[in-house]
Amino acid sequence: MGLVYLLLLLSLNCVHGGGIPTTLEGPFKPVTAPLDKSFSGNVTDLPDVPSNVEGFQPQQIFVSLSNNYDSVWISWITGEFQIGYDIQPLDPEWVQSIVQFRVLRSQVTYQAKGYSLVYSQIYPYDDLQKYTSGIIHHVLLTVNFRLQSSFATGLEPNTLYEYECGDPSISAMSDSHYFRTMPVSNASSYPSRIAVVGGLGLTYNTTTTVSHLLSNHPALLLLIGDLSYADLYFTNGTNSFLQNPFRETYQPRWDYWGRFMQPLVSNVPTMVIEGEHEIEQQADNYAFVAYSYRFAFPYKEGGSSSSLYYSFNSGGIHFVMLGAFVNYDKSCTLCLLSSIFLNFLLFIIIFSWLMEPILLDSLVSVAADQYNWLERDLAEVDRKVTPWLVAAWHRPWYSTYVAHYREAECMRVEMEELLYHSGVDIVFNGHVHAYERSNRVYNYSLDPCGPVYITVGDGGNVEGLDIEHADEPGNCPDPASTADKYLGGFCAFNFTSGPASGKFCWDQQPDYSAYRESSFGHGILEIVDVKQQTNRHDCGLQVKNETHALWTWHRNQEYYENAGDIIYIVREPNRCPVSPK
Image 1 (cartoon, one colour):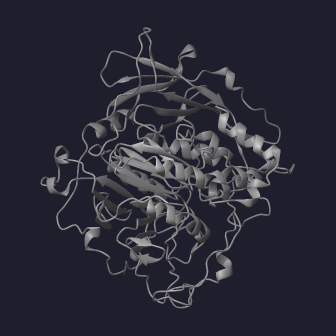
Image 2 (cartoon, rainbow, N blue to C red; image 1 turned 30 degrees about the vertical axis):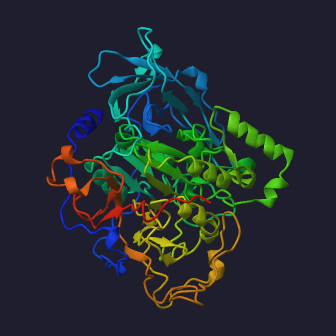
Image 3 (cartoon, helix red, strand yellow; image 1 turned 90 degrees about the vertical axis):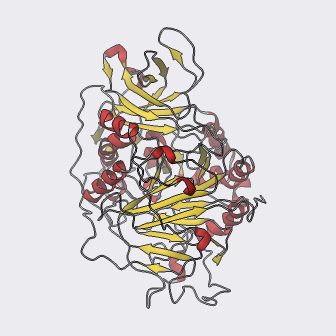
C-alpha cells in the first residue's frame, strides 16, 4: 500500500469547476437536503481485523505532525495485545524504537530513535477482563543523524520522504512508507488538500468513507474525535449500547481500528482530537488512556500542558485543536482550591517526556489552563505568516439537530468571544452524526466576521445517522436534557433576541444554518487562488493565496469526486481586522 500511495502523492489530480458560490454572497437561505431513505450506509461492524505481521514486526503505523514543518512523529505498535483475567504486560525494553528515513530517491539515509511504552485498561471489578497493549513506539523525526555519522538539521518543507520503522537489530523493520512534510509557513504556502472527518468508527460504511478519502489524495487528515468506539463494547467483545454504571470497553477494537487505518495514516500525516468515546474511564479514575498513549501530539512543543488540546502549523494555516471534555472556563475557583497532590500531577504532565494517563478528577485542575493557553497561543499567531486560523473540537456549538442540541453551550459562552476577536476563519466539529455548514455567525447572529462552523461527525460510526432537527414540530428537547453531563453546568437558556426570542428552539431552520444533510461522508479543504483555476486537472495552476479556501463535502453514496456541498470560504482581513481580547 505504501507504493500505491506514493504514486498517488506523485500524481495528485485536482478537480474544480466554475460557478461555485462564495461566502461573500452570503448569508445564504437555509437549506435542508431531503433524507435519502434508500441509502443510510452499512453501519454493521467490520469483522475483527487480524494482524498481518509476526513477532515484533511493526503494525498500526501512524504519521502525525509536530507543531511545524521540520519535524514529524512516527508511531507504531510491536507485539500483540493481551486480554484476560491474569495478564502480564510486555516489557518496552524488549525492542528498540528506530526510524530510518530519507528524501525520496536519495542515497542518504538518516536514523532517529524514540521511546516506547505500554498501557493497560483495568477495572475495579474482578469479573471484567483486563487488557494490556502491545509495545507502543513514538519517534520524533527532527534534528537527525545520518547513518554514516553526518549531521542534518531537520526535515525539508514540502518534501516527500520514504521511511521504515522498527528495530533493525532484530531484523524487525517495516516495509517502506511515505509521507510529505508540510510547506514552510507563509502566506503563499499551503498543503494541497486537507481531509476532515469525525465519528469514523469501524463499520462497512467506514470502509466507503476511507476509500473515498484516499481517492481524494489528502496531504493532511484531521480526525475530529470518536475514533474506534471501543467503549460501545463489553470486555468480551459483544456490543453494549446501554451505558453501564461503570462503563467497560473492548480495547482490541483500538488495535483492529489501527490495523484498518494503517494504509491511510502511515502515509498521510493525521491529527486527532478527543471525543466522548475516547474518555474510557477505568480503575483509579483514569481516563483517555488509549488516546493519550496511542497517538503522539505536539502539545509540549506548543506550550500546552495536555494532549487534550494543542496547536500546530501547516503551511499558512494555524490549527487550534481544543478539548471539549476538559475545563474551558476563563477562570476556575475550584482550580484555586485544588490539592497539592493534583498540582503535583500537573507538574508531572508538563515535564514528563512520556505520555501520561489522565485522571478524571484532575481534568478540572489541569484543563483549567486551557483557556489561558488558548489566549497565549492565539496572541502569538502572526497572520502575515499564517493568514488562516482554523479551530477544531468535538462538540459543536452551532448544530440544529436534536442529537446533542446546545450540549456545548457552556463552552461556547466561555470561548466564543476569544475566538471571534482573534479572527478564527473556520471551525470543524464532530459529535453529531450528520453534516451541517453554517453561515458566518457569532453569538447566534449572522455576522460577516464570524467563523464558518462545519459539523462532519458522519464518518461511518456504528450508532447510525442523526436525522431529526430541533426546529421541527415536537422535536425541541427539554432544556434540562442539554446540561453538560461530562463537566457539569447548564448554560442553554431561551434565546433573548432574533426570530427565536423567548424560545429554546427555532420554529424553522435557523438563519445561521446554511446547509444540512443526514448522510455519511467526509470533507476536503483547499486553500486556492480562484483566478488561476482555469484547468480543472492541472495542479500546477494552484497558486495559493491568503483569502480563498475551497470546501467540498463528499457523500458516501456518490462517487468520490462529486461534492454534495461546495463553497469558497473567503477571508476579508480588511473588513474583519483581528482584535484579540
